[in-house]
Length: 299
Image 1 (tube, rainbow, N blue to C red):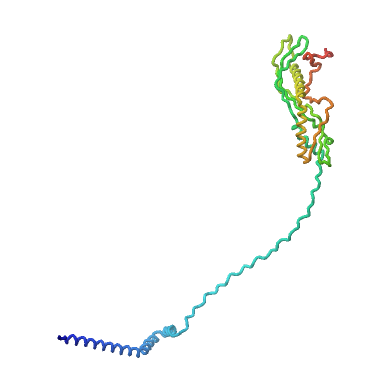
Image 2: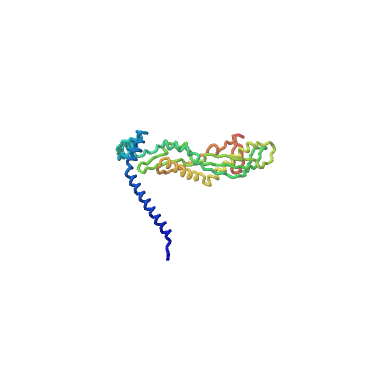
């Protein structure tokens, strides 16, 4: 076997070159290390000559081991403290007032009760409305005697007479703390004819006085109405109604129990003027014949 001598010589030559280059590089590094202080001094002298103050700053920044001084932040004062509010003591407790019992109430006076009762006068009145009635009327007047039929409608009212009530009618019992009210017996307080009309009339030889006949018819009807209401117990109804109304009224007024007593009736009930129309002078009603006649003294 044979070897190529030319290739072998080339590799050995390249290896020798490498060794020589590495040696030269090593020698250069050693030389550079040895002369580096001189090089630094050279460049430093150049910089010193160019700017002496900059040179000093560079030396300080690189050679001074002390840290750079950082100024402290500007001091900001704390806010002024707000003082606590002044303590206000609680008010002194005021003791409860000593209990004073209520005085015993003074009874309501009789005069005051009588004065207040007058406002109830209209409330104690009861009424009876009489339906339409026919009344036959005869008038004996000589040749002018006449008669007729009248339609009449009326109202009868009953109650107590407050004018007869005074302070003696009211009494107070301090032991029982109650009132007593004494009232007069009820009466016919008002009567009125709401409607009257001549329905039929008789023949007469002369011209009769029909206005006078109408007055006779009113009187005759009023007497009949009062008689009927008396039989129906209108006065008793007025007594019961007055007792109920006035007893409750005085109880509310005084706050005390009340008893109502009616005086005993010793005569026929009084009749107001409205319940007894005026009769033309010289005439009277003959109830047996139901005819109006002239009195004998006027004949």
